[in-house]
Image (cartoon, rainbow over all chains, first blue to last red; front, side, top):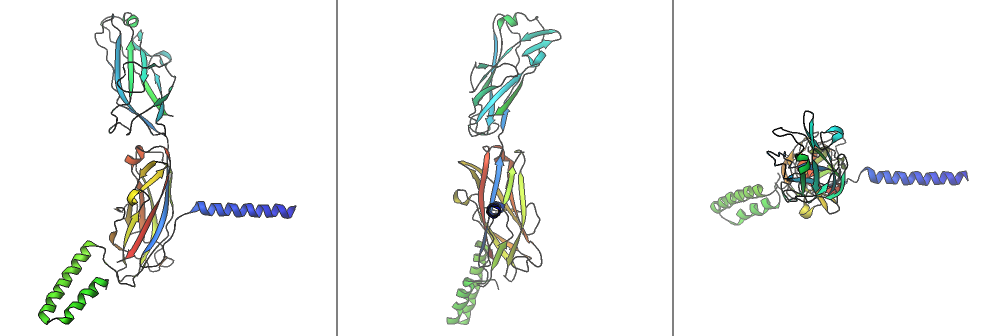
Length: 183
Length: 183
C-alpha cells in the first residue's frame, strides 16, 4: 500500500512538473543559421469597464407651474463586456439621497427616468440608490467619438403638482449623481 | 566584406571587355550595388549567421489602468557572425497579414513592438509587421551570450491606452515571431 501511495505521488509530481513546464514558458529560441527565428507568447487580460459621458446640466427657468417640466438629454454609455451590458444607479442631493431641489429649507421633488436608447423623451423611472439593470449599450468607443454619438437618454421631470408647490422667483438647485457599472 | 551574390555577378562582367568598357561597367556595378543596398537589408556573406536567444513570454496580467500604456521589455541575446556584427530583425504577429494583435475570441487587441539594439531598454524603434529593421549591431561574443555580455538587445511590447480603453473585456493572447539575419 505504501509503495502504491509512493507511486501515485511520483506520478502526481511528474504531472505537476510537466504542466508547470508548459505553463512557465512557450517562448522558442532561435538556432544559429543564415536566419534565426524565435517566438514569444503574449497575454493580457482586460477587465470589465464602463464609461458615462455626454452629461449636461439641466436648468428649468421661468417654468409655468401649469405645465409639467421635462428635460431629456442624450448621453453616452460605453461598456466593454461581451454583451455591452450595464446598470445605472442615480442618487440625489436631498435627504437620504432623495431626488429633490432645494433653496434653504424649501425643497421640491423631481423624477428621474432612464432609457437605454438615445432620443427618448420618457424611460424607466429610477428610484434613488436602486440600480436599473439589464441595459445594453451600442457605443463602439468609450466616449462615443466614433460610431453612435449617444446611446441612452436621461430624463428629468417636475410634475405640475410639485411646480405649484414652489415659491415664485426662487432658485432651487440640486445635484444628481449617476453611477454606471458593467454587466 | 558583407556583399553577397550581387557583387559577384557584376564583378565578372569586365573580364570580357576592354579597359574603358570595363571601367564603365565597374562604375555601373557600384551604382547597382548602392541602389540594392538602399532598397533592401545589406546582404551578409554567405557563411554569415545569426542567432536569437533568451526570449521569454510576455504576460501583462490584468491591466487595471486602461488609460495608460502598458509596457513590457525584455533583454535578449542577439549574435551575428558578420564582420560588422550587424543584423536586421523582422517581426510578425498572429493578426491578419502578420499584424501585431492579440485575440480573445472574435475580439482583437492591437499592440506595438519596438526593438533596441542595447539591452535593458524600455523604448526603441517601432517595428512594422513583416518589415525588417536594418542597421542593428550586436555586442555578443558568444552565440547564446553565455560569455561576454549576457544580453545585447531589447524587445519591447506596448499595449497602447487607446487600444486598451476600447477593448472588450477578456483574456487576450497571441504570438510574436522574430526573425533575425546577419548583415
